[in-house]
Length: 322
Image 1: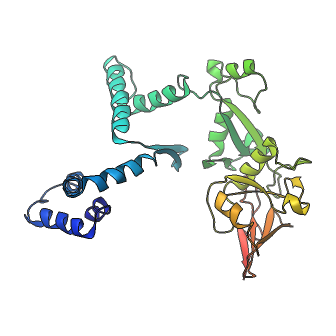
Image 2: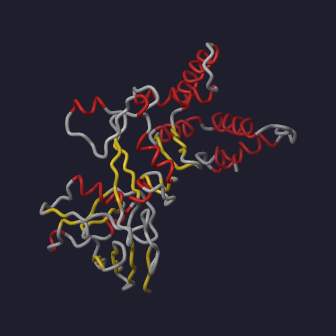
Image 3: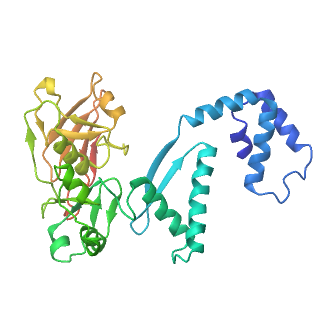
């Protein structure tokens, strides 16, 4: 697998040459770990065709990114794909700082110090976040009655009820103010480390409260509302992140700018639905439901994912009619 991956940018002839070079001694990889195998194959590829390897490396640099994915116990994996010199430099700086603080008697482990330093370096706040609006979807029973119904943080997923309650009151011992919505003034912003927007779901259906607008473009509060309600692209079988907040019935076809006629979809699905033969319209349902008809005549129904407190009945996440 590593042979194929590291030589994929080479011609057939050069790949064969690398194979012959490394296979000349049958004991080349005896007792060698994966990293050493990759390094040997990579070095051989560079010797055969340095230009192709350099071009692949240049393309790889253009794909640098940072991503977040859920981890167990209300944790997350924050990953960064960086050029090698930048990644090594970041880790070296974190390690040096952790070694210094650990040697000075800080009781945290080196890994804990590195993680805390990373957060503090990015946010500019010791142990906290500044200027971030955190949406927390929960039932009133979870907040006020100690119910065990889980809550949800859009962009992460389901969290424990006790964790959600603690999130609303975290840091009060350190005079950290937590607000239910984003403040308007810059002065208020400076007073906050974290602000939490609490969104409540209806006891029976799990629906969020409706809102509408006469504007053509979905206003920012409505877009946030749709983002939280839909979580991922509403096209059936597509779990891509939401990139566009779209009118289900297009504006040019007299579609209203409302919560009922709005949907969160990915960029590819938004472009696709504008092609001839595609149709979409809101439909009645226990939760927000869209009926989508494809150019082949197949009809699919997409239902908004269940929010905390939803009583599941009828359709689940969606139903297809073929």
